[in-house]
Amino acid sequence: MADYTKINFAEIENSAAGRGYDIEARFARKQIESQHLGVSQFSYGSRVRPPYGHRHREQEEVYVITGGGGRLRLDDEIVDVRKGDVIRVAPHVVRAFEAGPSGLEMIAIGNDRPEDGDGEMVHDFWTD
Image (cartoon, rainbow, N blue to C red):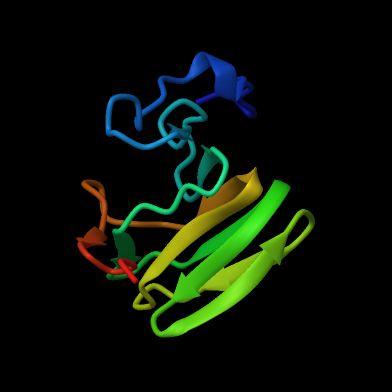
């Protein structure tokens, strides 16, 4: 493995395409050939709030809000987020984002995880 890897998020497939929400999701863990880190980019259209959330068995995550703003539901708590915010989330906490009127852009960073992932979708998490 090389001592560094460089890729542009625009070169990575949008994993959220065709899922019925105005969201782009680009996951770069494999492309950067990292043994310990996952880095992802998310863009939500104006006022987008999918009803599902997710949590992990092992992986801690950090979200960096890079544009727009909105809200983040963490279990039963809802917090406002805006450009420049950095939010660390423990693995067991269910989380979901809602974009504000100008949309929401963020980078997510995760640490080591099992080879096949450890994420669990939580359906009907944010429906009210």
